[in-house]
Image 1: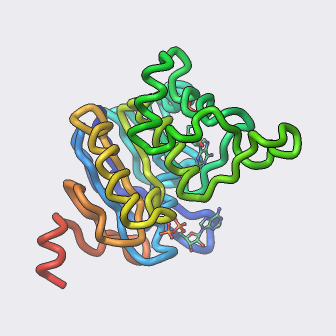
Image 2 (image 1 turned 135 degrees about the vertical axis):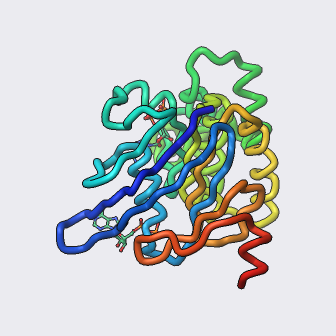
Amino acid sequence: AARVEFRDVHFAYDQNRQILKGISFEVPAGKTVAIVGPSGAGKSTISRLLFRFYDIQRGAILIDGQDLRDVQQESLRSAIGMVPQDTVLFNDTISYNIRYGRMSATEDEVRTAAELAQVADFIERLPDGYKAMVGERGLKLSGGEKQRVAIARTILKAPPILILDEATSALDSHTEQEIQAALDLVSRDRTTIVIAHRLSTVVGADEIIVLKDGVIAERGRHAELLAQA
Ligand code: ADP
Ligand code: ADP
C-alpha cells in the first residue's frame, strides 16, 4: 500500500472556473477514504488527478512522499488500479479482460478474482459489440456487470492504490454489499483506496471527506458525520 497526499491542490479545466480551490487530505497506507458530495462537486476530478489524467495548477499530489509529477507514467499505471465510472472493456473474453490486470496470473487466480467479483459465470464469453462478428458468444453486459469485471481485474492486480470512481453507483444495493466484501479482500493493508461517490453511505471507509464548491466542507468518520447532520 502507498500513502496518498493532496496538498493545497488547485485545479481548473479552464481558467475562468476553479473546480478545486485548495484541497488537502492524507490517506495513510492501507486506509480507505471516501470522497462524497453533490454532483459536480469535483469528486471525479480528484480521482482523475490522482491518476494524472490532468496536471494540477497549484499545490501537490504525493504518493509515498513523491510528487506525482516526478513519477514515471508507467510506474504510476502499475501502482494505481482504477475502476472508472464507465468501464470500457477490450474486445476479448471476460477472462482476458480480467487477466489484463496481471498478465502473468494463473488460470486459478483469474477464476478466483472472477468469483470474488461475481463474474465467473460468463468468464469465457465476449463483451457486446463483438457479437456481430462472433455470433452466439456475444454477451451484453450491464454497467454494473462491466464494473464487476473491472473490479475482478483490480483484485487480480492488487495495486498499492485503488481508485473507485463512483464504482458502486451502477450496482444494486445487494450486489453492492457483495462487491464491498470483495473489496475488503483487496484492501486488507495492501491497498490504499480512494472512493469517489455521490452518497455518504459508503461502508467501511476510514474517513469520509465531504466536498462542496471545490473545498472540503466536512470530514470525519461516517458515524460522526451522521451525528452532526
Ligand atoms: P463530481 O464527480 O463531483 O460530480 P466532477 O469532478 O465530475 O464532479 O466535475 C466537477 C466540475 O467540473 C463540474 O462542474 C463539471 O461540469 C466540470 N468538468 C468535469 N469534467 C470536465 C471537463 N473535462 N472539462 C470541463 N469541465 C469539466
Ligand atoms: P493497467 O491496469 O494495466 O495499468 P491501464 O493503465 O490502461 O491498465 O488502465 C488501468 C485502469 O484505468 C483500467 O481499468 C482503465 O479502464 C482505466 N483507465 C485508463 N485510462 C483511463 C483514463 N484516461 N480515464 C479513466 N480511466 C482510465
